[in-house]
Amino acid sequence: MKEIQAELDAKKLESAVLQEELERLKAQAQESDAKVEKQAEEIESLRKMAADTQSLLRQMIAFGQGVTGKESFD
Image (tube, rainbow, N blue to C red; front, top):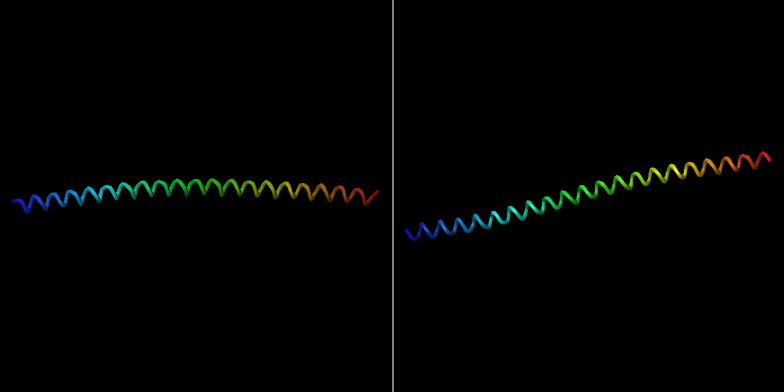
């Protein structure tokens, strides 16, 4: 009977260790998901900034061409 109890205690301990490991892995997965989400938001922000910069450059080029065009007619 003592052997069975010792085996049961060992299984309980093993189960508790595995449960702790599972909880640690779940927390790690949640952290990873949060990082991925944050990176996706940062990428989207960078894309918007790049689009805004391109738009500004186009406007500056168009303005420069307009000014240059007027000067050539003077």
